[in-house]
Image (cartoon, rainbow, N blue to C red; front, side):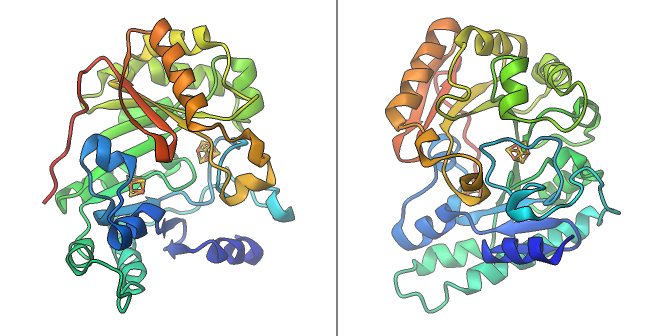
Length: 316
Ligand code: SF4
Ligand code: SF4
């Protein structure tokens, strides 16, 4: 990878793990330990923010270049690399062990912080959840099933976020995550090509293929919609058709956040207010059988489901 890319990522506090993975401190880890405020996934699903590792096994690689993405993309800051030329992959054990060490390093920064809760810090040193969601497309990592297994056997819950453009990899997973997210950020192919900028042919058809078999997963599934103003907050009937096809356990509707490298591509004004996200979710209620069951205004997220309450995961 170009040294300028590694330098830019280090500046944004990515902790590299092996050749192609990374851990980054989520702001909610800090908020939970220092201010006793937790992320919306703790509120909805019970996983603990202070015991969560935010990581990616495919830091530099993705099949899309979404405009709203916070990751560094080929061409950002005039840095160029081939996002589809994948490396020789590290083993799942190497990625897990390296991620645990990186999280430990991150937490060592809290020692001496007088505002940090000592109890939470102690618990944080024994993480129990991993959000495989930091950047990049995780299904490009050949050993994803083994990675999930390696975390599970250590007692972790896993939330996996994929863009769904490699259905064969998802279909072949030899171990399911605790919860599976598929990003659906466009109501039709035209918007998809403009907003998600696929880098592989037939990506819209492939995403639809993933949605076709999503309900065959045993774990809870989530259709994740990241909304950006004037980009993808239209054509609700298109979204409704995709929801009907996938029949996910949940729909998470969330605002684009003007952070990371996305600031190079989108203006601040593209970030919807919570009220606009909520209005979108209410319109979605009208054209799907889903109902709003929870919300996190501070994160600009609304949760919809056919269930009355989300399934909560217990961690030690
Ligand atoms: S689940 Fe997501 S938002 Fe919550 S602490 Fe982990 S990485 Fe952060
Ligand atoms: S699919 Fe995810 S990682 Fe890839 S560009 Fe889009 S938001 Fe970023």
